[in-house]
Length: 90
Picture (tube, rainbow, N blue to C red):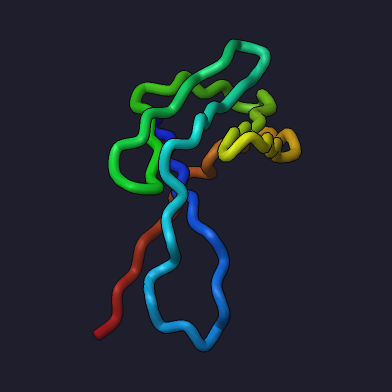
């Protein structure tokens, strides 16, 4: 699995410019299986390929930027249910 996190700053609703990206952050995902550091692949985008994911295991996002630290709540991964059908109507 590839993990991708996009970080940006908030702005006023009336501001039509793109959200300002947060660059130079330290971003990681941790679980009981270990800690996985993401790399900044473009301004404000942090990614890591081949992250081992265990269904039911809890993962936490950790971000360090400008001397501050942020942690997400732990979230368990869920299994994707199998598709039983696909339809298309034109």
